Length: 342
Image 1 (cartoon, rainbow, N blue to C red):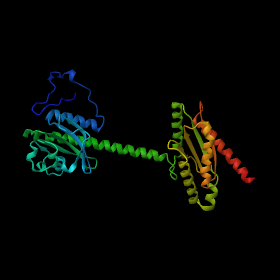
Image 2: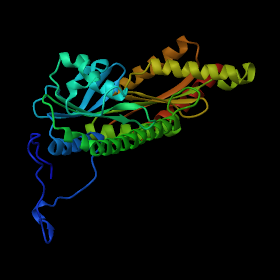
Image 3: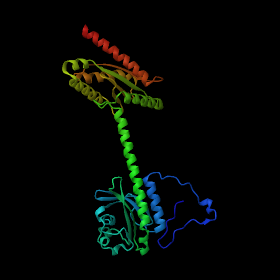
Image 4: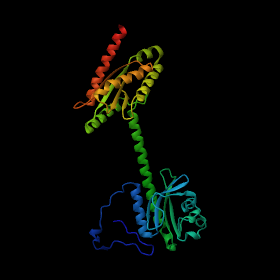
């Protein structure tokens, strides 16, 4: 049950216990916080209910600014999302060790009395504790402000504020570390689906793209086209000029295919000299023109390739279109070889 915000003069409202403990109606499930922001809000609610003060906030320090990430306010004019100059703040002086972490009479502390922050806001009392990230560097602060001076007994509550700040720092560190690991895992997974030479999708990435496009077509009732392309001269280039020249041919082909494709399309290198493409939202009537455009793009750059294409429509599947396109590519290769012999 979330505590109720109260003024500094009022004692906190505590649950009343009987012989059986806290009444059953006061019991609520206690589960984990749903992330750092929710935990921070819970901490601020508790501190405001227990200690008063008009504003409790968790802030983030970014270069020369202090951003209010989460705030609990009963009238102090600094909302969540506010961005304030760091150098002017009480928190900057607290972090530097120039001012105390608890100042019931803030204006009587020389460091705080000289802060430019006072030109913007009326401050009677201040509480602040640093929040550190996983590397021990300053992330921000857990802090409080009141426009009125507070009793000297406020200083006795510093251990509680420091304990809660440390818990938030721990949660922050674990959450950020988990996010970094998740990003690294996602990057590794994405890398595993990319061809090391061209940066295009590899066979694994292509298979996933085929499945994803199949789901999209089935869900939205749309069509797509698949093209398969095989370089005619890669082996000859490798034999005559070396594998470095062959790699240059593969890189050029990849660049040309990407240039000829739209952002939603998929381009992959699925074999040594074999490429495949999916053109989203393409119908059967578009397939011949698309294939001709790819062939012209390659021919203009001096790249010889055999191409086959097919559309996925109606009750068909993307994999079925891929097989038809693959057969068409081999038919084109045989026809081209026959024309060269002739």
